[in-house]
Image 1 (cartoon, rainbow, N blue to C red):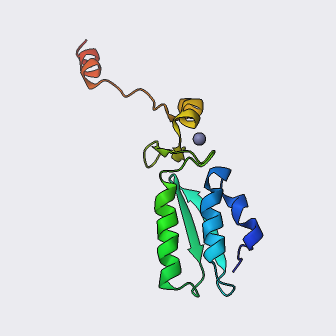
Image 2 (image 1 turned 120 degrees about the vertical axis):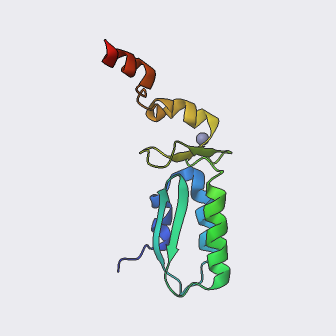
Length: 121
Ligand SMILES: [Zn+2]
């Protein structure tokens, strides 16, 4: 099993979330190792080894929940953009969302009424 060294922890997410990683590292006892840190569906995901106690796991859940309101890129107030199943679900502030908005445009849905008319032609 590959573990993540503490100094590598911040490489796994964009800098808007680095303050969350700092809070994890400060609370992380010597005997607990990091299995994974990543962004999934716009939320921070932290996995620790089995030495993590309940108190530490509570902190992990707290940090993960908080990440859903913090822009991954700049740390300002953000919200989850995009719907589950889309490729670009991220937690972004208004500015970063505006920059990346083109990524979130869904293909035009087929208008069922128009389709029916066409079939009757
Ligand atoms: Zn931002």
